[in-house]
Length: 158
Length: 159
Image 1 (cartoon, rainbow over the protein chains, first blue to last red):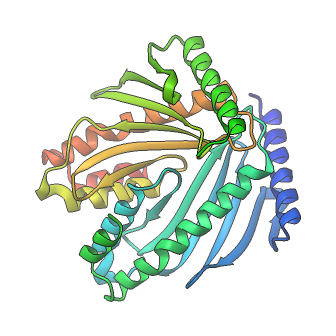
Image 2: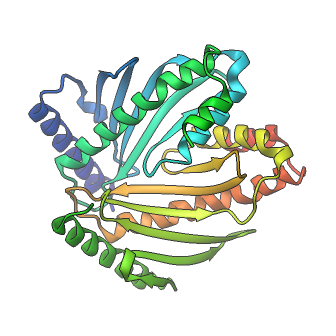
């Protein structure tokens, strides 16, 4: 697929996403030149900032959710084991974990390569991401703060 | 439970998947009853078993590949850190690692909810997965055998 077609398809997907967000009444910031939208969401406990971008080159919708804390230095190994353990249960999406700085980022992607993508796809991605992050973010924070042991996390999520 | 409309869409997606595989000359086993296929690929080093499923309830196409070795207990922490380093550099797909059992698999998904997925998208899933698995399966095997260090894996992932 040539670059022009790729760019057009990415723009189409981006327009569908923005139209969907408008229809649902979501507040978001648009960075049209980069085909990015940014928004925040607060679950039961913690807030998460989200970025959704249309990657024209790879022809992917890329949703990233940035958890609002870093794993404490003395809990970095636990953070790796816990995020991997959580990921093993998922049908879609994953927590990416940076051992060096303790940052946790939720990632979910879907391809629009040569495909027509509808509004409900974006609704699914956002809803699934919000509920999964909401389920786990306070647990990861509790591990970091020493309030939840790794063994208890594994038992709770087995 | 998937409704009839979802099942119809899943069937269309499954047919598109099989069409893609046929067009590209892949040999595969077809399981119509659960909209899945199994095939294999040989990379540079280790063989790759691939399973692709069209999940009518979740409206997802999922590709799974179990790595052909388990992680021994004394290497489980190291591998966890390696997997975290590898996954953090990925744009699409991830290695799923069960610390308790030592099992490792690669997973990549795409949604067909409210969407028409093309053969090109499904072909992309297969080629990216094979490329990524082939890149790392031997490195992870060498890590557990002590032939490669965690630092080597982290360096390779960041290149």
